[in-house]
Image (cartoon, rainbow, N blue to C red):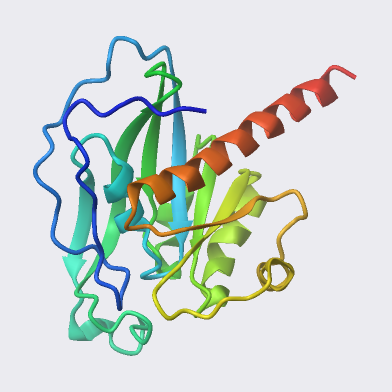
Length: 227
């Protein structure tokens, strides 16, 4: 599965503060472009996960248009509510959504990426944004795997297929895959991969893992319906 080449940037990469996984300085401006005439199909993909897990960073690293971010500064009002222990230098938080767009299959398919806010108090918004999604990429942090359960529970309840990508923060602990699957209560068929949300290639590989799984999942469902 191939992704269309970028028309408005070369080899610019998005870097992230090492200690937080929060996005660092923005890449050079990317002009918003219209959907190419080559696009014949599109799909909505949501990116979910706990607070500060790297959703904004991942969408920013892969989007072929200037990403839309709806963030607000973290204030004292969040003390005792939002856990900043793993991201002590994080200064903003998503309060609505992130949005980006990429193209694949030689530019014939457009993926619209919607990043969900990480805090569980936004669950009504999660439900609205997840409606109509073909699938979801769930980011997880091994320093706080429990933070992923709210998003996973929502997806299971809604019947939305998903893949899980462990965002490899510097200094974060590593565990065998079997232990990660058990901690996240993943179905054996659910893909589990790794990525560095700061790196475009790594993040694209995580999305490819998801889209390949969705293709297989859809084919299996189609065969089952014909029996």
